[in-house]
Length: 234
Ligand code: AMP
Image (tube, rainbow, N blue to C red; front, side):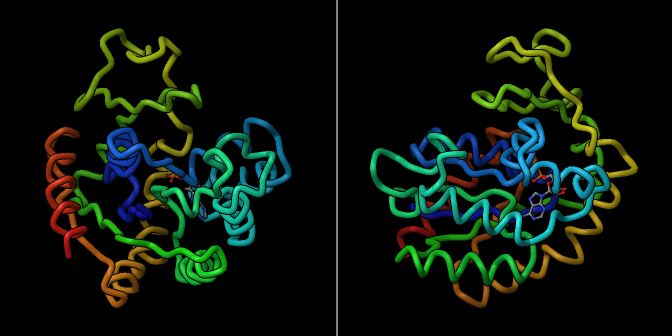
């Protein structure tokens, strides 16, 4: 199954994609996680990306397009086990895209790439939340920096059992520097201007399904499974 998630920062895409990936045994490909890993490793893409991420702006399209081309075609050694599942490219075995594409130019590049790889998106899920909730959700978010884990917590809505420590792997949790209030405002404004138009783009292609993203993660997940069951039967 080839799925794509849309939604504002803080809508809960990361949490839902992780749960869905585990349930359906699909690779969860988060552009933000890939970029943060590249920054940590000090790769050329990471060095280029960092200043844009720190300000809450989009990293240049060519960086993301090259990154996803490598990962989806399984061509990259740098992406380790990410880009392939056995000998087949991910584009064939199934994936969940989270955070890419984020503007119309990236969406067009993804269309071209998937066509080249002889596959296509099956569904695009728009995780919908009210504006008021987003800032509170993002600024209270705490993430596990262990890339094998990437668990997400929230100081109020989903606290870890031990303060500041990941429940799943015991790593010390991070408060992402771009989850601070000044940067969050910019990320939300970038979302509204550049990413939100993709809702209409994928609706026009008949791929869009909308899921109400408000409520506890398990509640949203149940709504997502319901909608997907219906959507996939169509
Ligand atoms: P996220 O974890 O998805 O919120 O992404 C964190 C940051 O990474 C964003 O604020 C952007 O700076 C950058 N980023 C992630 N995905 C993309 C993308 N598709 N295009 C450009 N920049 C991106």
